[in-house]
Length: 410
Image 1 (tube, one colour):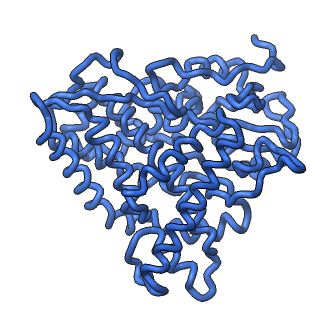
Image 2: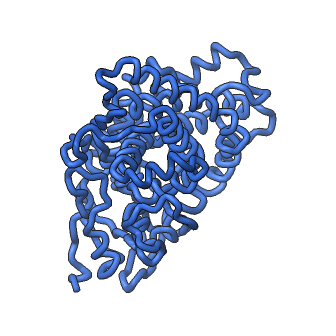
């Protein structure tokens, strides 16, 4: 058995794969609480077992720090405070904001969005087929990349034409654990400034009554709620919402969609079964969320008090890093966890975290992925990879690794 006090590197994802790193299997067995050196040089306790990861996300002794507050710096070196994203809000503040935001992702609202998501998907497939040479194309460029951004822009109320302004900052924040603090904070403050300016622009354009009857994009609806007499939602909370959606709603969905489609294309029997039984798409989406690591990024939590886990003393102030990509392959929680089973049920994966800070947009992500798959299989039932999977180039510019191209034919 390894020395429990040795500081290990965070297990690396094999090149040309989405992960999860194979090393987590050994850690789950031998070292479920392992002290690791994070990409930015700090240390943190890696949690690799399902039970521990799930519990950590809901543990009130562990909180997600502000990006401007970790690693901690004091005195003249301390950066100015930033607004918390939804993941970083705590206590009463988090409860009141979550209450205001949850209806935006409820069944009624998503039901009204489904036809629009399908229309976008069909439009992109039409354009791909029309521009294809020899019934082949790159699925990433034509379908996987543009769809999540268009859905995000329409749902939230982000101008698509501003994408060159806000997208570079979101990519920086996704790699925050491996970048200098100054670079991360510059991107965060820039996104906050962009969100504040966007909200001011909508306020000038719309006046005081837009969105009161449940119409309009998410920003307009939240602004209307913030103006309602007695509302507990502040204007700064709407800014935080925009920043949160930019960080969580585009690149993450894009990379996971690319990986999910590659997984289906490399499991043709499973894909054919799903094509022939489209009613199974719900369980299939959850299995793809479990099987394909949605987040290989570093999830930092900070201990608020001393406690012991599996014999390791975790002290107040220590970073604790639950790893969903490892938890979702734990044989204690999932039968034959490395096998793709699109009919798996139950499927209590932790791709969206757990507890009060579970991803608010999880249902939107499910709806979007289900629609992407359904439209693709309906319109191109003979779809297959046009090149060997092991020869595909990969986008490894952030921890959310995905194929850079998906050449397909139909």
